[in-house]
Length: 300
Ligand SMILES: O=C(O)CCC(=O)C(=O)O
Image (cartoon, helix red, strand yellow):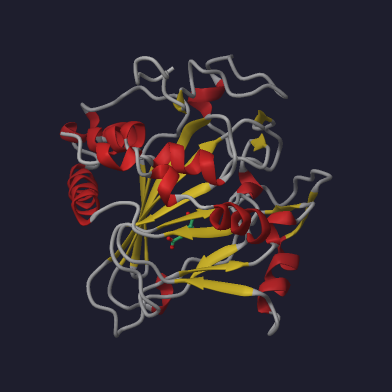
């Protein structure tokens, strides 16, 4: 079943020069109406089924053996749940990643010649709990890669109005010359380009902090630069139903392998012995999803 083939030819119409400029200047841009209601419903159904099957043989028997992601995991908090790296166990998600317009859209928005898929996460919020807010952070701080082209492609699978946990970004933080020492990294470790997390917390707390709030309709997408500081507002008691967003991390032309003492470990990836510091991710482990082969339409 391919629910999204038509949208591939639409990418050039969807992405305007204004989108590209806004991403470059502000570190986040919204493209509206990228995926239709059928695509959003199909992805939600596949993700829900996988969440129900997580930890059972029905889940484990589908395993692509992907070595670029850590194993799938489920993280539950107040009013929210995160499903990380499920794509390797959900055929429909993979079909969407490989065959929808997602990769091309990412490439055109950040002016990349090629993009590779890396990781995925789904954020589900329900129940109007104040704890459902996603705390302020940026994504790059723990990435074992360097480069500007490591964005998050955040897809609203449900409507995300002002009371339903929209994302908020700190405009211009994409141009920060430093990296932050994440509270998730070893507090004792030190790397020269990292500065304390308290700096990030003070910045977002300032009354004049330049923040943008991003309500979305189901099927809208946000492209978020890896340095852009962002959070979500909490889901309010007035919001009904679930707020579901799927976010996918991609790697473009300028990305190089650069693990250090503050970055995440991906044991399966490191065990391949194929990752070389200062080198791009190898095609065997991180297939190029866009561009497709111009003659055949196959992946390169
Ligand atoms: O959807 C959310 O609440 C958070 C998404 C996010 O922070 C991310 O993708 O990095």
